[in-house]
Image (cartoon, rainbow, N blue to C red):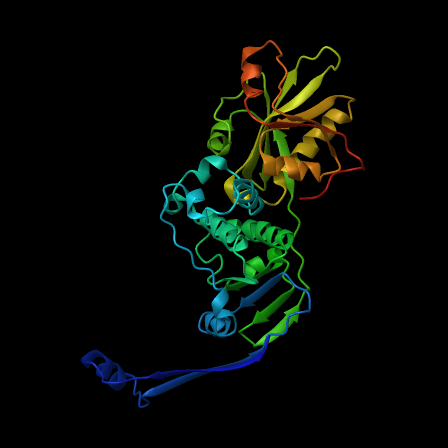
Length: 359
């Protein structure tokens, strides 16, 4: 990317009465006001994440538009369901996979119009559309400017994982320095000093605490892709980051003629603002370790293709069955949750190494 030397010309023409008053009051004599931005953006040969950061008025957007104007993300949303705003030629499986990969993994929310989504969800939908476009670079101006700062940080972690997985190049233009570590950028250009740095930032660790606690399902149920209530015998677990509940997991004990006890995940859901960074996987491993260490069977059945594919890549989970056949266990409430009408994937937790991956 080239050296830049940008001059913005601003000239005052005919003065209104108010402008004339301003000139008199502040003793302004000039009619021309020029701004100049000079520097050089030189990313490494191979990169995925870049950031142009600086305080307001330091030329971030001007520089970005001069160098990358054709790549700016700008989308229109008109459909009653946000999934219908995506190009109709995109296969459904690809669309659902990308939505999940950017941390927008709540199918009930896919059915909402864009305008009613939270700012964090809108940011992830915009990213999904950008990733599915056939263009070399994705530029986001005013990145995370309208979202809560914790949401911005978690969303930035999900974003960089998704961009790297897709093999894209993403440039964030922002005045917020608190997202830099979470993005783990390959390069950063600061418009405060017009200086360039490369790949030295690493994001903080996330401390996830899982507690067995009842009564919080109502906070999570609307984000789950199934609408059934919890089984009354389910054990309920909630994951916390600090004091914030961020994920929910319910476990049930299934009768089986040969395996006792058999524990399976009945519900697993992460709040939208915390999706896409591996919380569900880490939570399942923490609970699974407790059961496996006691010599017990621990597993999950899911009908989400994207979720199933991510579990297939995880060496701690063994695929046991894929298809539409579900066992009839003779219990009506369990048969409903194990519906054979959906294409499902069943996994058993069999950790191949000591410990589980950090979030």
